[in-house]
Length: 193
Image 1: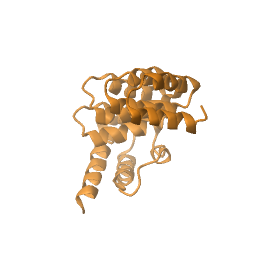
Image 2: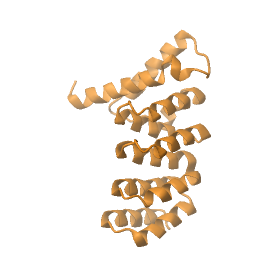
Image 3: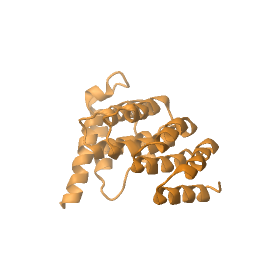
Image 4: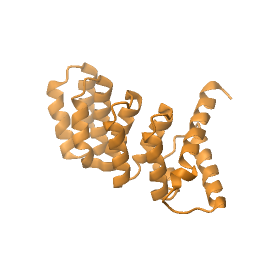
């Protein structure tokens, strides 16, 4: 195995372990040992596929309530490796439910969250909560961190609401970084705004 592929596989295995522990499933649907083993194998295979990032359709093969609960724990776990938390954040973006939104808000509100996780969590929040993410997007667009502001532009695009595009238009006038200005113009232009 090359270094890149072994890292991806190890990351996938770590997330699978986080998702499919008995503790992660506590309080949700009770699975037989056979079903738990089958889901663990399916998830490890899904996450270990280095040629393809799991789609929302892939994640939705699993029970929503238990999967969102487990992924929420993984994304908020500060001890977890950043790539695992990023993949968990993007997975939560597949679910338009309050629990996914709360988990992503918790990641964004945690001052210990690194920029490596913060941007993907914001984009996932916009994917999951659409217009409900606009206050977080607006706050991120005012951040001192240009990488986080760039992620906020992507989040506004994901949200796709008039309010999100209005926030982008307002920022365009104040933004000092040419790269971010260009990205805002590209997003607004592609959305016909």
